[in-house]
Amino acid sequence: MPQPDAYDNYGRQLNIDSFIVLGDTVYFADQSQGSDGAMPATLYKMNLNGSDIVKIADNVDIDFAYANGMICYFDYDVLYTNSTTVYLYDIASNKISSTSGNPYLNEANVLFKENNRITFDGGIYYMSYEYVSAGQRDYNIVFYRQDESTGTTQAVGYASTPQGGGGQS
Image 1 (cartoon, one colour):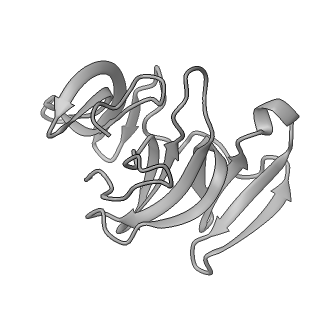
Image 2 (cartoon, one colour):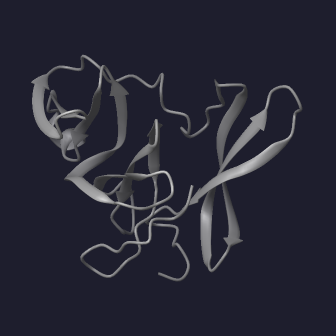
């Protein structure tokens, strides 16, 4: 998956800090830069080739999920306000609504989660914090897929924590 060739309002190139692939579309969150702890993110969608980037929502939590035709996410401030509001982005209509509670969110469809190894579609997916240089950028997170039948492992994506840099922005 390519790094989005797009920039935020501050001139920083977008990063894919968490994502879900549905068909030919990638839904991803890009966390704001910061110095400590989790920062608010912006939720986007784009084609698998990195084209047609569309912003869905600002000030979202980095974790989001897919269920029943919806991208489900929390407002970034949920950790501080104990809000029970879940926002639902309807993929078919491109509309956002909200509901109470936690009816959809679970981690069943989150492939890359710290300290987890998730089995999906013939592979074991996991992330590792390590410094790598890929292309013209430096990263401190690598996403891997290990093929269950052959045991071969390959990097399938890179990201940077806002706190950990991102090399040349």
